Amino acid sequence: MNIDRAALGERLVAILSDLIAIPSAFPPGDTSAICGYARERLAAAGLRAEIHARTPGLDNCVGRIGPGGGPQVVFNAHADTVSMGERAMWNTDPFKAEVRNGLVYGLGAGNCKGSMAVHLWLAEELARRGGPKRGEVVFTFVADEENLGPDGMYFLRESGVVKPDMLILGAQTENQLITAERGVLWVRLTATGRAAHAGNPAAGDNAIMRMVRLLDRLDLELGSRLSQRIDGAMRSTMNVGMIRGGHNTNVVPNLCTVEIDRRVLPDEKVSAAFEEIRTMIDEAGEPGGTVSVEFLRGTNGFAAPQDGALVGAFRDAVLAHRNAPVRFLNATGVSDGRYFADDGIEIVNFGPGSGAQGHAANESVPIDQMVDAALIQLAVLDRLLA
Image (cartoon, rainbow, N blue to C red; front, top):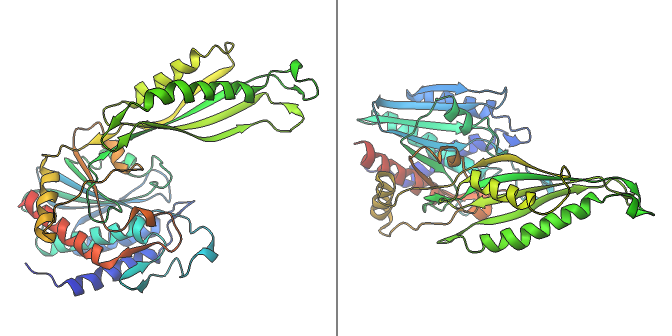
């Protein structure tokens, strides 16, 4: 069935304009208004639409269509955004969509309201055509993604609201595919010591210097190991993201904390990565009871099989639509797909916009890419559920 590109572009811009006008920035990350908007659209189209929330204000909208019985294909786009930052950096009103030279500008235009607009259109178009002939398509618009928190897609999985066989995450991939993603582990190290006057440092036990010794060990020993762990364009990495210690220059500090971001390859496990750090710290030779290692959060990585049904459907749809093969991109960050990494399902990231636009002032998304994303994903569903 032919779809007029110009008319589709106008519809997508209209939906995206509505979404941009509804504030959903983190903090506080309140998605009640924007998810209410999504639920109304989905229900009006005939989908079974509900709001699910564990924490007030952190709403998640879920819409379903299809006879069921499998497979369940789940689309996901996060409804929250980062804050606008410094208003003076914006050339347009962050909460009013503005079209310039084929681009839609506004807070969240690319990350991730552009994909949200595409998914809403896709749900409505699917319903207009009578829904899939088999299986179930589920559209999820979630909170708490920008906070890496537990009240969005994590909550929907843990509560059993969604049980996908295939998961399609809206992302700024310029309509290319991300099929593999590293896991992420956050660890807190705490070093303790004994306070004393800085004029007599020998009377104290400097917690910051203890932490320096520990970080040197991690940098040399763990850093050397990680440099050998490579999977294509993906690398196993560690980054010291935060350090806090001391309360006055003339006092020997008795406390120092560090938070570490550790990215693990799909064939590594977060639990093993944590134990590796803890063992290395335990064997560093510091006095007993002066160092603690705390697991903050972590999820494993994933890699969708290149010959899987979902990846194959995207390969075919992109080739038919663009007369060019899809490219496979390397993921720098993490998506809500990480919560399903151990479920043995196919997970891909796909959507309009450039990753360089996310979390930046004057964020934008190309209208042509939104149109292509809509048509390609409609073709993917035809291939999977016809």
